[in-house]
Image: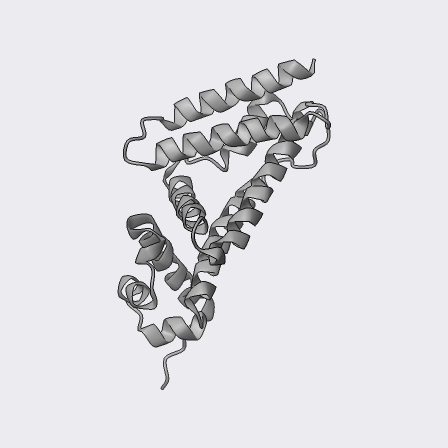
Length: 198
């Protein structure tokens, strides 16, 4: 009797292996062969699911974005003034920071893709869209916090820049920022943005 393969389980197995490789070896360490070794599958199974390496890389990046998106669904992103306090704003935006092992892994993967996009066009569309999505989320949270809509994009750029710096610090071997320190810095920045509105 032929073995029944669950396509979703196979896809998940491949993506988990790909993400693990990006975390440990960077984007350049990702190939059909290395994913096959990491996942315990054969190269043919991987090619059957993702015909090209670009398809595999795009799916890995999308998977990280989808994971972050699912966490954000638990927060108000309507942009309606008064829907956020500094605490709830920090909780929403904190979903995008490496505050635990899962989010650290996601941020390492995104960082690897962003660095690769400097020299490889294939990553640029994905990383540009994700950067734009991050800007949108932060802007909506800030308007929910009461930051004026004409000021929110600039304030969001400042917060996003802080987030990128903290993520880089926490995701590299020299990084010393703890999750509590990142949360404190984010909260202080949100408080300052909120106070400039009043």
